[in-house]
Length: 240
Ligand SMILES: Nc1ncnc2c1ncn2[C@@H]1O[C@H](COP(=O)(O)OP(=O)(O)OP(=O)(O)O)[C@@H](O)[C@H]1O
Image (cartoon, rainbow, N blue to C red; front, side):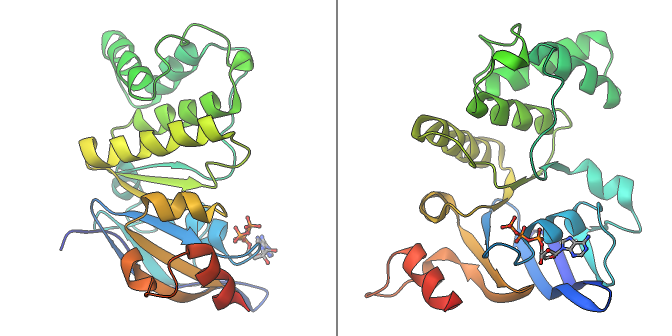
């Protein structure tokens, strides 16, 4: 199996208190993995540990077989992440911002222009690329964030609560974009969300955490039985 995100004994303590405690997961290439837990369970902390924004107290993380803390550059090449809200320069156009960021990936002028056309088109923003970001809806901003994550041709995309505040249309567009990138580009996703209906629709695997501990990790199908077919009911049952 082609494991693309792997954690072993991943633990983060602050002043001796574990925020994340001994997490062991192996996410296989091509999965859409949902990360679920109540407020304060440790979802953002896990995502920050996965992307090297936090250093673990013990344990390790490998992205595409590279240790995030020892081989950071090699590990981070494979990941595009939006942890908490994406930050934009609202006075710039979507295209202008992406072209500036594409420079950081070492692309020359022509490559930058082509890459930006490609990612704007992938996220369905090609018609609005020359308008200021301040005029974009929240859904468009989320898709611009994904366009930004796609600039480096990642193999993994990590999204922290991407559907927060989106209206039903925005949610549908985001869902379809994630499914498109997963199926057509074979991108692996790790997505945290409180919107369990959305995760139920798209995830192949789930990680359910409570107080920094994993309560369930496996294929989404395995969590249901004949009488329990709704993720929200199962989640609430697990938390009580
Ligand atoms: N730097 C820090 N120092 C101390 N405690 C922290 C720090 N960062 C986070 N915490 C605590 O760690 C726990 C996990 O926080 P985290 O933000 O990872 O949870 P979450 O599952 O993402 O929550 P939410 O669903 O509300 O976004 C919380 O109790 C939080 O207060």
